[in-house]
Structure formats: structure tokens, C-alpha cells
Length: 83
Image (tube, rainbow, N blue to C red; front, side, top):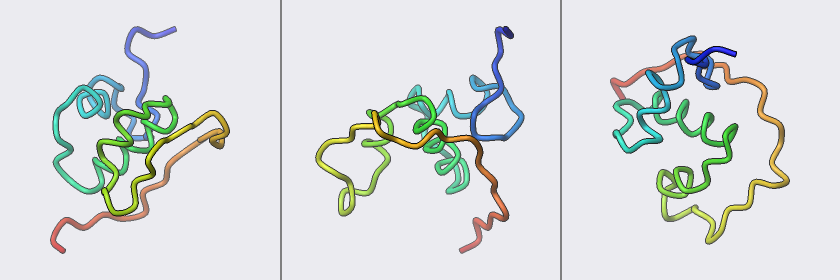
């Protein structure tokens, strides 16, 4: 097994270089980075990160991922930060 696993978000970067930095506290710089990091958090059952990055108006009081689907991939079809 590699010491530098590929990030679950599908970026082909290592987890540490990609979503790992956001899971460790760095702010996601773009909406795409945020969505990728949230996908990776679902894959890795990082409920604290998911709750912290969920908009308060729709965030559940508790998050239990025990019955969560098996996340197998993320496809980003496009991204525009010039909204």
C-alpha cells in the first residue's frame, strides 16, 4: 500500500495534497474544492467536517453515516468560479 494514497475525490492528487488539507482546517478556496472535500469526508466518515461545512439552514442536528451509501466516485462535469 502506498504511503501517499490518492484522494477519494478523484482529483488524482494525494489525499494530503488535496482534501486532506481542508479536513485539517485549511479553508477550501473554491466551491469545487469544497464539494470535493465534502465528498471525501462522506467516503471517510468525517462527520465533524461535514457538519462544519454544512449550511446552518439545512444542516441536521446530528449526522449518522452508518447507513450511508458506499461512495464510489465523483465526477465533476464543470466548474465556474466567476458566478
